[in-house]
Image 1 (cartoon, one colour):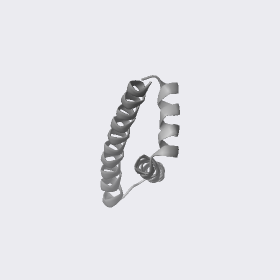
Image 2 (cartoon, one colour; image 1 turned 180 degrees about the vertical axis):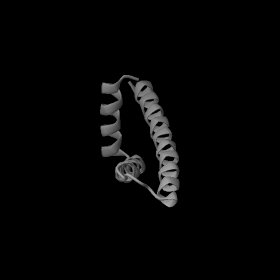
Image 3 (tube, one colour; image 1 turned 90 degrees about the vertical axis):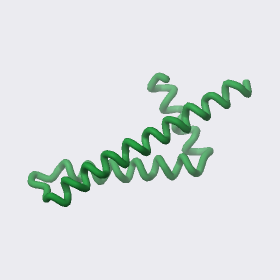
Length: 80
């Protein structure tokens, strides 16, 4: 799946699927918090642990979103 297809598919699912929209919102929230944490010069142990945890959660969400995108794409190609 190329980047243009991925982006347009993602936008379509955000508009059509409430579950996908929620996953995308959560993914964006994690991304913002990770940006905040990476900007810290001397993160505490708790902040370092939070960063690791958020990276794992963000990746899991990304995998789930990608799986939904593939499933949606498959159903669209079957219906055409």
